[in-house]
Amino acid sequence: MIMNGHPEARARRDYILEQKRGFGRRVIGVFPAYYPRELLLSMNILPVEIWDPPLESSHANAHLQSYICSVVKQGLELILQGKCRDLDAFLFPHTCDSIQNLASIVNDYLGIEKPCYFFYHPKAPYKESSRWYYIKQLEDLALRLEKQFGPLNHHEFKKKVEQGEDLRRTIGELYRRRAEGTLGLSNVEFYRILRQVEYLHPDDFLPVLTAILKRPPDRKSKGLAVIVSGILPNPPEVLEHLDRLGINVADDDFLSCSRRLLARPAISTVPFEAMADSYFGMQPCCTKGSAIEDRLKSILDKAKSSSAKGVIFQMVKFCEPELFDVPILVEGLKAEGLATLVIDTELNQGMSGQLVTRLEAFAEMIG
Ligand code: SF4
Image (cartoon, rainbow, N blue to C red):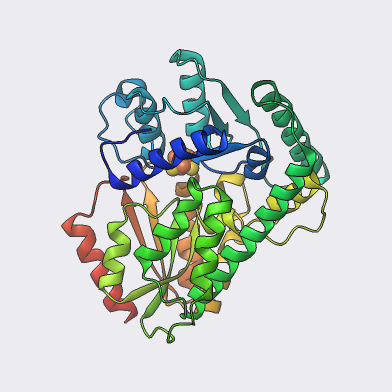
């Protein structure tokens, strides 16, 4: 993929090409959010996630309604601008109606001649059959992938599932140190590093994280702490501005970050079962139909353990699953004495003067 000469996009493309040439890996473009990463990796497929490519939107609008979120808009734009040439296929998890519609546009109408895979993970409330259903979906996906990418090596699958556990543990430790205020990374640095999970192979990503954790703990940060929630940390200027105001994001409830990167440790060591353990051990999420009370409790727990004074909801405009939850979450958080701020942004659009003023007023309120 080549994206506008943007430095991070260039780094991604160089990395993808290196992975293809150096390791014979095939590459799948994966749309948000929950998908069985370890299964793909065990078939020597590198998943490269498509959340917010930095592109001028010129072609996608003709295919979409005006009230669509920019995750879908930017993802479609990437395809329409012919910047997915290096990919071998696409994977669409069943995240929300908007991703479903995108899957249908790409698979049924664009004629792009790349295989499209779909992954229908179960939604809450979970029943006894949900676990069986999830494992069945994994097995079906594996069978479909095998036709294009060759047979699943079960020994390799087990190794990748163990590595996935290792990665979750390491990211968990990174989050723990940040909540404690001793990680020594700014808000911008933290998410710049963490978001490399979206395209780096874990063989390359894990050493980056362990090197950070090996550094001696920083002196406990004295800044004000907040939790940030939403889909993903974009526009990054919000984080930059929080850094400037001396506000530390002590934890998050981002769909692209903690909601899917952290999970209770798996109990089983059998790969498909272990993957089910992780899936059902993740944090509550509106795109999985979790009860709002569970998500509220999860955010309150994060606020308590990091002594956060408030919660910022960084909403992607027109994100329906979030729009259902946020007003009720705001009420629940206020009732517990936490300050809240809801901001509505388009991806990659920078910050308006009005947004700067609102963040500053919020900082004064919690200060
Ligand atoms: S979860 Fe929200 S932001 Fe993400 S694709 Fe769906 S509607 Fe868009």
